[in-house]
Image (cartoon, one colour):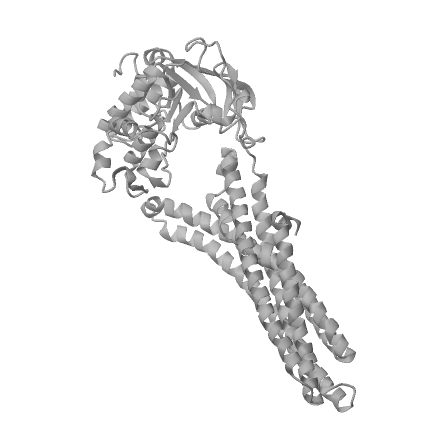
Amino acid sequence: MRILWSFARPHTGKLVLGLTLALIGSAMGLASPMVTKWVLDSLNGSTSLTGPVTALAVLLVVGSVIWLWQWILLGTLGERIVLDARESIVRRLFRATVPEVTRRPNRELVARVTSDTVLLHQATSSSLIGLINGTVMMVGTLVLMGVLDLVLLATTVGSVVVVAVLFGVLMPSIATAQERAQEHLGRLGGVLEGGLRAIRTVKVSRAEHRQSERILAEARQVATFSVRAARREATAWTIVWSGIQLAIILILGIGAWRVGAGHLEVSSLIAFLLYAFGLMGPITEVSQNVTALQSGIAAAGRIRQVETIELEEPEETGPAAPTVAGLGPDSTPLLELRGVSAAYGPDAAPAVRDVNLTIPRRGHTAIVGPSGAGKTTLFSLILRFLEAQQGELLLDGRPYREYRHAEVRQRLAYVEQESPVVPGTIRENLLFTHPDATEEELRAVLAQVRLTEKIDALPEGLDTDLTSSSVSGGERQRIAVARAILRTPDLLLLDEATAQIDALTEVAIHDAVQARAAESAVVTVAHRLSTVIDADTIVVMEAGRIRARGSHAELLATDDLYRQLVEALRIAAESGADTDAEPAENAEPVPAGAVSG
């Protein structure tokens, strides 16, 4: 409840107003049976009916207006709370560290923003008020019943107590079943999303049945716990309904006996029966709102788990840090790593160890090594997706810790190996990093990656929606490269930008990269031989360490692992396949100078 209340607390004023309106409306509802008794007594006494009938009309009109106002208020409030929760979650997710986000299934994070926030709607607005109002209405009804007849009240209270005890016993099991169902629903979405993303692999592996069964296993778990919750809810509601019906039967029997004995007036019995029928309303309201609160509390707990995600840094609102004055363009290296070690968790083994690397302000540095050598981790450190556990990184001679994350990243551009596209148009993707770029700048980079004809052939040109099916993998990669080279960054990082493109386009991108290297620094994770050969400096990594560095010719002459990597790259190039630069087993050493550009 404390977690749930934390979402509603900022809207306390509107909640109080909604509760006040609900209590006024309930008070008018409670007054109706008494006014009905007044009408019956007036008939028996042959007095004017103008007063009681007018009172009933006023109660109807004013009560309708109040309830309309309250429903609109609470509906609006519920949507506002949902929006606030979604804003909080989305902003936190995009300010979180990359490892914190990537270690969780995307579908579960999406569920926190979508389905779980919907459960907050009723729980934090109408359920809180409905629970209080229903309780007050129930107590008020019982009090007025006591005014009419204490014997009948005792009969009613006895029935209500039995119903309440049985209902309370069932509630915890309902909440547990609903929570387990939501957990498996999140897993179901994650497994389904992953399976659809890898649909080609699934089909080629003839794994359609196995993958379907894996997904349906989660679906069956959702159904199992949902059915369990539904059965117990049905049992709870049956107990409530039966209890009320039993109470009414007892009231009729005992009330008729008391009227016959002269202990109760007929008008009082009718009013009491109206209250008894009306008692179903607040009991139902309380029961429904308790159920909604159980779902809302479970959802609130899952949403609050997002707040445990580690953030990169507080939201940046202050001015940018000043640049270091007095440094000429070549007076110090652009980037340095000094004795850097890092791991993907406090208990994980280091992914890189004691790395020392200098990136000059101009030139092309290629990083090669077998899978698991630490190439991607090195990029993650440079981009501040991962923080160093030992050693330090320096940008312009200043430690990374003196910069904000955005200040580091505004100096960099990055092309991922998978080259994901951002939902939107081709223009929006190109402008994602630099929204103020001109049409001429866009046309220039498209020409450099040889996409001009492709874009011009599309019906809507740059404003064509970019989806996974509208462009090929190679075209998607070229768009990512174009976005990165739209403005010349101080450091361009490419995780093999030529991995999924044809030879002619590779030449175009290669020329664009070389042009950038003449003006600024370029670092690539190299999976192709052409990238390795033309680099000014080649860094060979193995088991998280830098094993060797130098030019292509120097490393061919001095490093066995590099010769094996080059042989693997050469074989891949001849076969037309891409590789992660795994050394070929039993590869013959390649003599220095045997491979030329």
